[in-house]
Image (tube, rainbow, N blue to C red; front, side, top):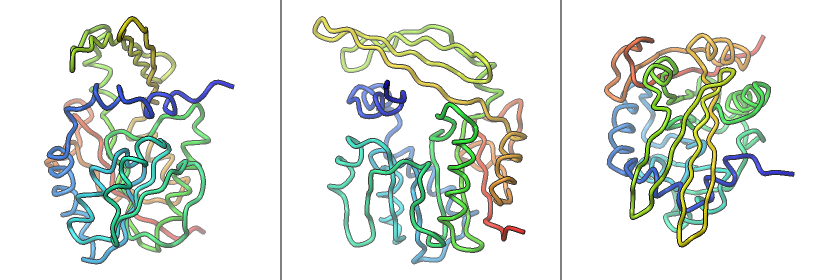
Length: 246
């Protein structure tokens, strides 16, 4: 059975080469902005869901929070574990599976680390797991791209040369999903990867969050916390609260 696309791509070292511009400084700016509306207690327990190599989680721990990072990529978690300390731990984990209950004051899902699955059932299961992970009144922050901007600014083909590698990138939209293929050749060996992300809109998230008993409290359109505008915003950032099920 073929692996899901993210298992292959995120474990590849070339994923991190292609996206190397998304570095610690970018993560620090985002976290500094988000801590204002989250208004967490100094010793809050924070889950970085789909943490990658831990650039957000590490900075949150530096801020004094008790931080857990989860990611499905074995390679990313193996790298992140070198930074573990009393207030920072990393685990390989599939977000579609439960992890602790009524434990975290906040769950963060950063840099469009959602929408990867083949079915919306899996996306809803993930959000229901977030609900379970949060303590009553806990907050969930989802940092997603603005689907309208993605569709309007789509570049069908381009080549990016990074660290001597010519990455041939192709993008297309089919059935509410944006597909991105990544092709390159290294020492005579061809490589091919694909990304697939569901093009969720604010309305889609409102439906999904309600089904998971997560009440959206705030929406922002960028890391400067500007109001979300479907036509002009670069991001769709949601902060939701765990509410009691009825």
